[in-house]
Amino acid sequence: MKWLTYLRSLAANPAEYYALPESERFALWGAGTRDVGREFNARSRGTVLLDLGCGPRDRRSVALSSEAARYVGVDMLTENQPDLVATVDRLGLRSESVDSINCLSVLEHVFYPRETIVEMYRVLRPGGCVQVQVPFLLQYHGYPDDYFRYTHSALQRMFESAGFRVVYLETDWTKGAYLNAAKMLEDGSWDIAKPRWRFVTRVLAKLLFRLNASVEHYYAPNGRGMYHALSLLAEKPVSHAEGRA
Image 1 (cartoon, rainbow, N blue to C red):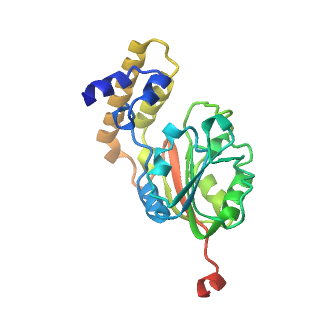
Image 2 (image 1 turned 45 degrees about the vertical axis):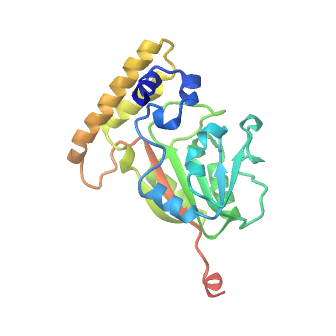
Image 3 (image 1 turned 135 degrees about the horizontal axis):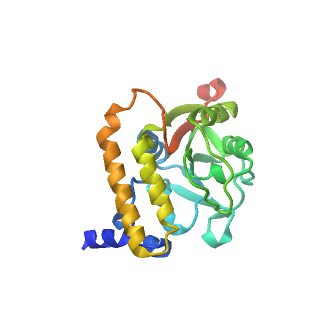
């Protein structure tokens, strides 16, 4: 039964967890965000999609669900079996050769994030878009290393400085003191050796997450406050000359 598999995932170690169907894994929330995720999927449908830091095949569900006409996974690790082995700041692709770029939980692992954003702009066709997700409150996690955390204002300025127009910038989906306490517990549970304590820790995380939903409407309107991560959707503008062509 599905709920029994879900209960097992509460005590699973990483190998056991990723062997389970995605719909039956414990998670505080899905990888898809609100307006950013919906808009990106709509814009990338039927396009050439570049997935930066794609990771192993069993973790590419967000990009693969976008219904792109052609998917190109990029990773620096050959063991992840990407379509293109490259670093994200030097892709080696032709300028203006892709329509959309997926970049989830990657920029914190890149020592040259500004150069990476400029490289995204270079390979993206005018009118194309990029979806980015980065952490603000998160423990150290090296894949293979971990360098930066981002605020919403910093990320916006970095993309605008490279020439992008920021369409959406979201933090609300990971906002709240209880939510972030829950996320810290969830992340910390992977390092717990004993299954029963992984189970207890993840149950506590789920309870705190639900508590946050109950008190969410008490947070200050339009306030950024304490957020775990942020999502951005940016597009490469079409010049006036290209628009008349």
